Image (cartoon, rainbow, N blue to C red; front, side, top):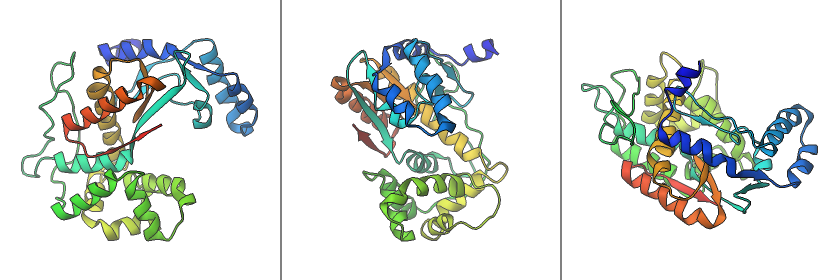
Length: 285
């Protein structure tokens, strides 16, 4: 098990593991813990205790996802984070899953060629194919006009696609988190053919994107999500992270750093988008 885990590590993973030791929490985190629901308080308390003791787990999944000392920490507790004993800044990819879906559709080779045409960029320390995706062959094409409309919305600031679907469904802004959960479950990783108003709204407006999703998932409903996680990890960990000179800690589709380093981290993300040709927006705080 340990050998398998170690075989996934690259030099950037060692650096990321070391840098998370700069993470700490203010005393107010313990006050926030007391206000959490009982069902989450125990697990979150253990995470806070581990950070206080400077014990940071680190692992790399077979899909390239990095799990560290803050990936399971509740969002409200991350508000009390300090990095190198300084206030933190945060940069993450807006509307990440839809943006990566557009990227996947755009970069997937025509059906008669098969495969995935992202073989021009290899991270330092990686030999052989830098990215291996196992997708069904003969996936349907998406007309350029529909793909452009989808990517433009996914790229929009403040999650334009989600705002668009909220409006289409007649839901208000308070339903945004519920919409995102349903979009993930009912559109990107639907198991079965149960009715879903979110899926119907999406299918009506993006029928060929929906057909592409269904074709990818036709043998396993989780294929697309695993693929998007792989792309997310490739982008953040292998493309962007090695170019950041300041210390930081990753959180799947984003990263935390010292507040003073936020501009440098933002620039690294933007540079990474340009390198691979991803259309996406950033949320910076």
